[in-house]
Amino acid sequence: MDKLFNVAVAGATGAVGNQMIACLEERDFPIKNLKLLATARSAGKKIRFKGEEIPVEELTETSFSGVDIGIFSAGGATSQKYGPVAAKDGCVVVDNSAAWRMDPEVPLVIPEVNPHAVARYSNKGIIANPNCSTIQMVVALAPIHRKVGIKRIVVSTYQAVSGTGKKAIDELHNQTKAVLDSLEPEKNVYPHRIAFNCLPQIDVFLENGYTKEEMKMVNETLKILEDDSIGITATTVRVPVFFGHSESVNIETRDPISPDEVRAILEDAQGVTVVDDPSKSIYPMPIDAAGRDDTFVGRIRADESVPNGINLWVVSDNIRKGAATNSVQIAEILAQDYLSK
Ligand code: A2P
Image 1: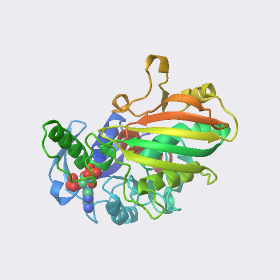
Image 2 (image 1 turned 180 degrees about the vertical axis):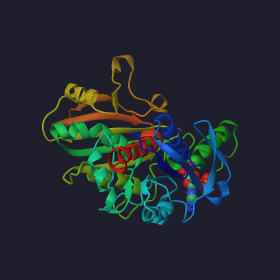
Image 3 (image 1 turned 45 degrees about the vertical axis):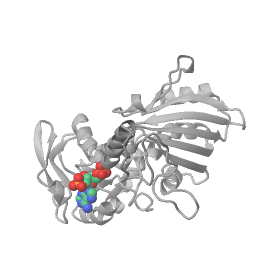
Image 4 (image 1 turned 30 degrees about the vertical axis):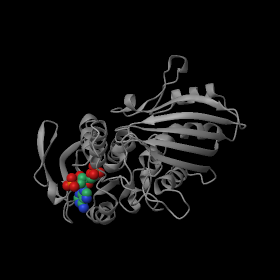
């Protein structure tokens, strides 16, 4: 790929934005000019990219003129407002927020699973990046679904605080310190203390009793797999871990499959590493997944309580594959297959 692109990162000073910049550098994305955007509060702050100090600019209506690809992680409201503004200026938006994910005209893409959907970027000039907990689950399940069909998924998540952003990383750090020092921990981000605790609430509750995060896992999975017949139910839980989401995933398949066959399929699957040697206490853990791009799968075993049942334990770095890496991979497909011509 010889062509170079003008790229903007919206939300450049955030936890995901920072990682997006690192991913663009690590993967040597073909960049002509990199524009870093955030609020007026951050304007002038410098961020290092390929040995250069790039000043952050305030995101405004005119930020995207001359920009080819805009990678957004500045919250839903910002994407809702500025996504179409950028698209109108000819900038293709890769959006990490929930704002556009369920829009039928907007593709929702995991490069290992449905790269073909990128082609639909031209509908609105926007491509959506799925929710972090959806990405890692679907990276692990799509190859099994393709082989034997998945009938039902029951998932429970153990999600790191970094998914909520920088302020939540600080909150877990400060609360942990406060509790260990026998001080009253300050609570600003979550409805309850997160240090030494688990919160069975991620995002707001909906009328059906599920949280928004739980319904994102249901609806996004069906959209990405292009199959509405799968029954999915989710319980999402915030745990006092900084980086890396874990998931207990129980599936029922249409055709029979053994744990060994699942292991073989996943060993061949793109973006998956099988870590599964229980006799040596070897299984995926967030401390090992942090800073890496793969989805790690272990504890692969039969659910003996139902026909065709399989249990899996799925771990991935929510900021990397769950957000930044997946977005940059989408941008790579866009650049290589669609915008180079
Ligand atoms: P800023 O740092 O200037 O507030 P996180 O998810 O880690 O909290 O980061 C959110 C990111 O989105 C930050 O870079 C933040 O910038 C940016 N952001 C939030 N709201 C806006 C907005 N209205 N316009 C531009 N950037 C925004």
